[in-house]
Image 1 (cartoon, rainbow, N blue to C red):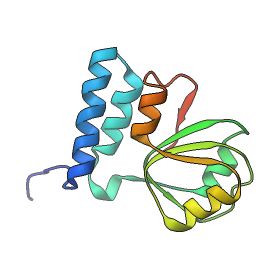
Image 2 (cartoon, helix red, strand yellow):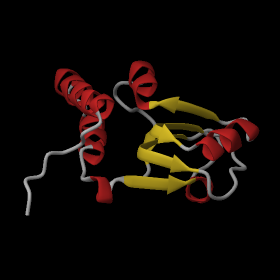
Image 3 (cartoon, rainbow, N blue to C red):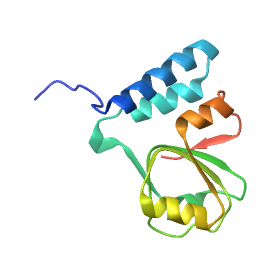
Image 4 (tube, one colour):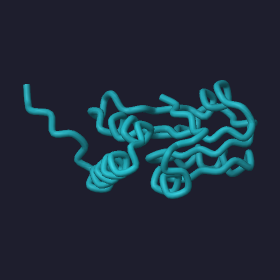
Length: 121
């Protein structure tokens, strides 16, 4: 069996490195948890459907998905979703429901400690 090398996407590698660095600087276990979940092998990475988000959140929640948000299901609640990537149908449905989609980098700039943010895996 080959040696595990981790993510090969250079942007994902940089994001993980930045999250770890920031988490050690401000002593934030929230950012470290996100970095660890993003650093998983490809087969174990997080994929969350909009139906799951709709089922497990309330209006006004801020959610971070350390992986990909997929467009299966409908989103009827107004939430802020932060993720590594969004599928095109997911972005369209998020905009249609008047929710907000943002990258993890944007979330870290606005709320580095993760106060009031839920990690959805």
